[in-house]
Image (cartoon, rainbow, N blue to C red; front, side, top):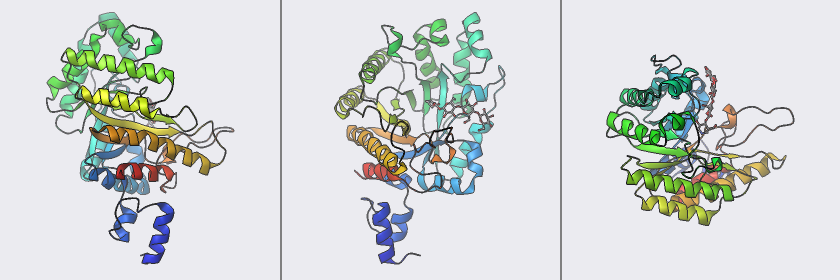
Length: 356
Ligand code: G3I
């Protein structure tokens, strides 16, 4: 047990007392992002996979820091319905059981996406144009997890303004077979399967500071306005939150206006896959860590200011399970904990942002 002087020195160095109140060393030192988020009435969590839960040190860090989990890949259709009509819920169920045992929640990701589908699906959709290939899957998944999940990413990454369509949608086999209404079908099927489920449209292009991101925000807003006008049951926008430490910074003013417009539609906000790519910058990991932290805070400060935030998730908790360094590449440092599960400047930045 640290004595008070040692704790203060340690806390000052790690910033562990960041606005979380010095209510005793034990709590300030061990308090995780989970507790800090709860103070703002929102959940903090991260993506994970069942094989990561076998790592006891990682699992205890997960329980300390996260109150909400999402399957990195085990609840996607290429993991669930590898063979047509045969559902493998094992991965999702294992994650749900772990979350429940630890007093955490689990969110579903994702029901309808243009990729990560079993090999048989695109051809079956194209040849049959049978909408039940979409609606029956959504119905089966949402019913299986009925009442058990925090929220569902019903449709993922359906927007791509660079494709040049007037509606800004991403060409894909779903769009080719059913037209833009495939998105409506997905949300209506999810709502019918679980009227209490929180249904999220999730995408990755609204955060950044480039002209392309500005076009993405415009296309997303237009899509959401149209869908809600048609009565499509979308409850929230999922901002994936994949940022770049050494790329164009988040345009806080444009992001703020965008989020105000999204909130004005009556939608809630989730940050669903936050991480900060630290490639393309310094060789010095301390410089990379600080740039990652700065980018995270610039983004989260604006998100929290907009209000209506239900959850913030990072796309992983620790660098330990990111792809390892390749030739002349550095091991990525995109997440709040390093590969030894130590809190990084990104953790401090998120804690400061959560503490307001
Ligand atoms: O399928 C094997 C499984 O059998 C094996 O046990 C496991 C062992 O690690 O690996 C699995 O392989 C791959 C898995 O990543 C490993 O993590 C899957 O085949 C592969 O599809 C999967 O890729 C995922 C990718 O989405 C496609 O689904 C990534 O983990 C995941 O990080 C990435 O996440 C996406 C979001 O869903 C949407 N937004 C972008 C984000 C990053 O690309």
